[in-house]
Length: 229
Image (cartoon, rainbow, N blue to C red; front, side, top):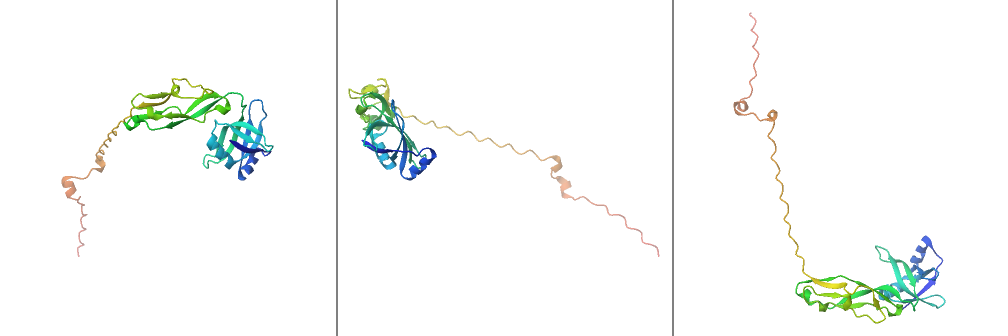
């Protein structure tokens, strides 16, 4: 798998102009080599990255036609648009073993799942040590072997090429069968009763009995005696 790159002199915030032109700023680094500032076509990179991931050897083709073996070590993407913002390439030596992680691909359907049990996929990557060109693309794990409660698939069940050393302990669980967890129904808390409003004060008490029926009588002042003629 190959990917064309070119040396770039644009650095810092000015790399935005590269992105507008459909290029991605990249950095090449490795043991015993000088770091290089590169640029790569975003479209070309996305196509290669989808196939290679971060564990398959890719050869960078520079402007002079030279081939540089690398692993894609880091990819920064925009959180909203998912466009590639920057890339780091790790230069490797093909005659030196490296440590990397190989993805697990689950295949098949577990009979236990059809029986109402739950399949828990515990491990999604396996750490290995190998020469770069011997690294497997993935480990296939067949879930069809999981038939009943307690069945598990371990690292020891994997079949790796003789040139590949699996670094994870053999007893590490990759997938297992468990019971379906029953959700506990919790009753809502009782609604607290609102206490009755206190009785009105005496000052606001309604008149009762005769006091309410008979309005207060007002005294009429006595009339002045008529003047004698």
